Structure formats: structure tokens, C-alpha cells
Figure 1: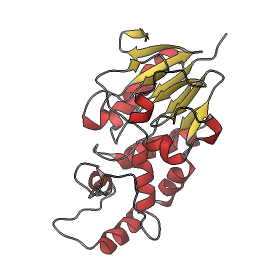
Figure 2 (figure 1 turned 30 degrees about the vertical axis):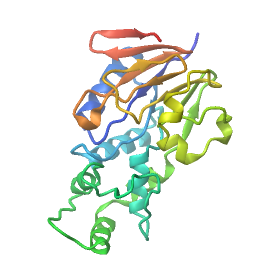
Figure 3 (figure 1 turned 90 degrees about the vertical axis):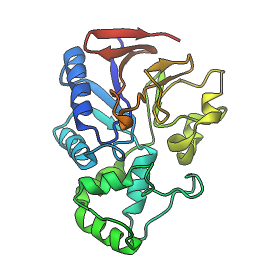
Figure 4 (figure 1 turned 120 degrees about the vertical axis):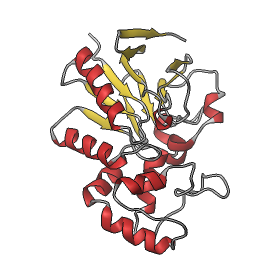
Length: 242
């Protein structure tokens, strides 16, 4: 019998949605269920710190959890380096602390408050003093891809035509149109988040589970047995078909 794999979409600091998703999984698969998190644990939502704390606690308790790297997690990690690093894939004029990206909310969850203009070096020093080293280690240890025999789990998607073991990190956390527009098959069914949709959707060659938790909507939760996929809801499993 195929071992079920449970998947949780982008959470963006929404601890209540994490707890709801884990409750659904516990009810369906029990406490030892394998869970893949698709990344983007931080930004936009109110409690990025609390969400990372929850994931660290589960990991340290031996839960069967795989935590992938999202582009927002990477932006946070890069800001926290000794010399902050800018992500070149952001639109011109954008940066992690731009109002639309959510870095301000993430720092606020660590108690870093500021008003008006502040020098980047001052803000960086405040952040370095507030973010626990255990959280930086957690971010550093996030993985780019997880595979099962029939599935590949990534944050954003893959570049079509490139073998899975040759994918670039920047594509795995940022790609959109080239991946979304591809109608052919991939080496495996790709399970991803990154681009919000109104509800979990199966496209035949990929399944998108980013249902907009970063904007206050319920997080996408699914279970796979082989390539068969169900969305998990309070009413139970609902089959997702292309």
C-alpha cells in the first residue's frame, strides 16, 4: 500500500492556519504522518516568529516533517546575513522591506519596531539582536526539493525540460510563467505553492496548493497516495482531478 504524503501550502506567518492544517492531517493520518511544507513560512502574516517556533518544536519532537525553502524564507535569511544580500529576482524597486512583501511584519513579530525612515544598517543591527540563532539555523537548513517515487515537491516550480537533479535554486523558489504555461509532462507530478490561487488546483502535470494564507485565506492542505490527490477539509477528503 502506498504511504500517504500530506502537504501544506504557503503559510506566511499564520499560526492558526498551521494548527488547523495539522489538526486535519492528524485526523486523517495520525500523529506519525509524513508532512511536506511547501515553504514561505514568513512575511505578510502576523506571527512569523511563532510559526517558525512551531516548526522547530515539531522537528525537535521527531515529527516526520520536511520543510522546503520558499522565496520569502530566502529573502529573510539573506537579510540576516552579516552583510544583507538583495535577491536579484525581485522586481526593480522592490526589496524585502517593501510594503507589499512582508518583511516589516516579519521583523515586527520579533519585536523589531520602527517608524518612518531608518538607516538599513541600524535596522539590520536591531534584527541581528532579535532573531534567535535557532531560527537562522532553521532557515539555513530548509531544502529546495523533496521527492517520492512519483512526486516532486518544490516551492515555486521547475524549469521545463531540465532534469530534476539539475534544477537551479532560483527557479525552484521563484519560477512562474515558464512553469505555469508548460502543458507537457514533467519527470514527476510537481507539487508546489508560491502563486496564490482561489483553491487548490490540479493541472494534470502539477498541483498548486498556495491558496492565499498570506492574504488571510485558508491554507491549502492535501494528501497524496501515489499521484492521486485529495484536498483535506473539515468535511474530510475531496478528490482533486485535473
